[in-house]
Image (cartoon, rainbow, N blue to C red; front, side, top):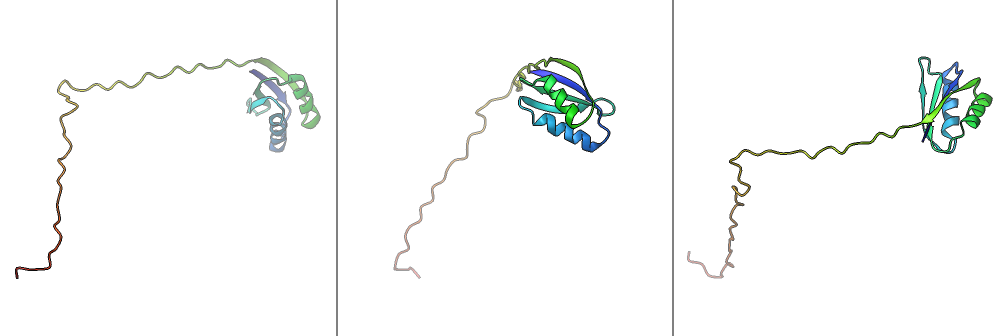
Length: 116
């Protein structure tokens, strides 16, 4: 993965969105961001992106562009978080509570005769 920073003269938000759209449509680009105090730097991260062709295309479509840096992106290795350890008090018994007893209720069929 390469990280490319290009400084582009962008006077308006329309120029910025045009530059972002141009860079985002380039093959191999994974992410695009604006950087710098006046948002005049385009930061491109991707694989197989030709920085010279990208800078030339920005010059033709947006305005004066200068290639600032080209470098490799360091991949952040995410360390797996350790599983949460739950400590129980010494008097904990996992089988303390038994499920409630089940009661079966029989219903006898109504007879045709009555005592009353």
